[in-house]
Length: 454
Ligand code: ADP
Ligand code: MG
Image 1 (cartoon, helix red, strand yellow):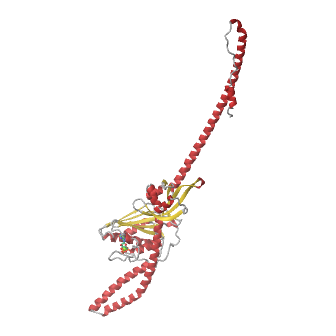
Image 2: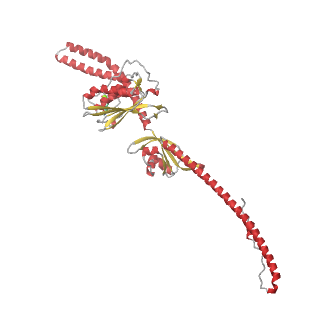
Image 3: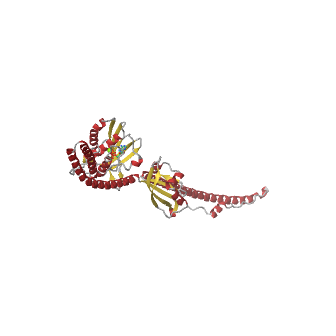
């Protein structure tokens, strides 16, 4: 609607026709003046009517204009509200995506002041203030970023950050610049991926390689020693038969030592032999019941108790029953030996969290064997799976090496958590029957079984 022009308003404001000055007249000269005045008044009235018509029209125009403006305002308001709602929804969506990420996200401004942290990051490292942000970024990198150096971004690296408490967490860190419209930089986004599990798997693989090499070497030595040992045994038996007195006694001592060596050799050969797996669908409660029955004679010999707790409806394992029994019994024997004054051994079985180590989802069952014994010194933790590593006077040091081998042959993992003086927890992760691991053939002839440690 058009706005009234200035000329129009001036017109409205225009002067009314002049009415002549009223002069003092004598009653005799009244008539001719009256006529003139009436004429002038009529002119004024006509002007007034015309002006008021114009004013009314102008007022209407203004009213229409106001109504138009109101409508436009309402439309704009509605648009604004809708765009606000859309922005809120987009932010809510973005937030829920960021919050459900398995990686920790930290956003900082150009002075490295935190402007956003997602839930995962807070779970990993707690609340993040300016000082903590610099710690997480790393002093050196923080210094360079504060100086505005960006030529190395985006940056990917591995580092260790301190989590809640004193835990050190290995993380894969990606640092990128946050650019908004017109490539204007507003800060940096840091993505922290917890790689402790990956590191553990790497360590596990390295350990498996080391043990395989040790196994080969052990097998070589065992074969070399076996034949001459047979000869020594034969000679010692002859000496024992022929000799008397001191000679016979010495021959007996040689025979005892030879037999001890032969036991060690057979352990060594068992360790070196590749476990042959006759995999079957194996319900966990049945397996643990068998462990309980087999451990009973051992438990009766001392002040030990065994507690077993199995989660309901666990999927069956795809495993060799005899081999797993051996592995679990080795762990139970070690647990009792770690508690010479007595105590409780707890075995629990539950579903393990789903995870993807190589992009593939694994479904697993987690079996824990927990004791409240002497625990393991930190410097021994990596060595306990090595063959012949033992801290016991009568130990063979082969129990955990065999257990490790059995679990690896099942495509499972074994991990230990231990606090000296507090006890130890051995965790086995084993694949379930429907995971379709191809290399565990269902039936393989079992010519040579591994020797249990007990
Ligand atoms: P052995 O029992 O013959 O010593 P193992 O291979 O079974 O051989 O165990 C190796 C070593 O690991 C043990 O000597 C001991 O030091 C340590 N170990 C194993 N299990 C436990 C446990 N539950 N608590 C404490 N230490 C343990
Ligand atoms: Mg043992």
